[in-house]
Length: 135
Image (cartoon, rainbow, N blue to C red; front, side):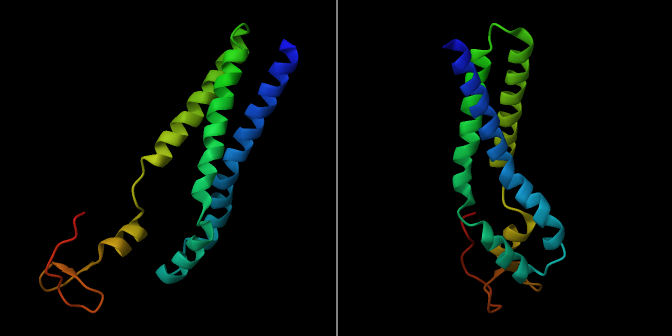
């Protein structure tokens, strides 16, 4: 029974880790085509990724399954160390990706332009806004 459980946990850890890498590979393969796009076309291309935040569930599945794998393998030192390393790598990647703020393009789009004459924020029609945005 213990051997069967170990096989299932290994399978789940590999499955969730592979599923967590899928979105990253999709972004990597699409990047060369999007780098030189003008801003308007770039945002149209980025709209394809709406709803991909739900794939974060897969990352948590990968975290939990690699943690379970390291617990199941606690009697075998070397495989357990690899499982712990995988857990730390996934946790570090999750921490790194969730801590990032807006990109340069989205920051410029959301905070608005600055008037050349006054340096204050301008409305899309070119008029100076009277109130600063709270951010």
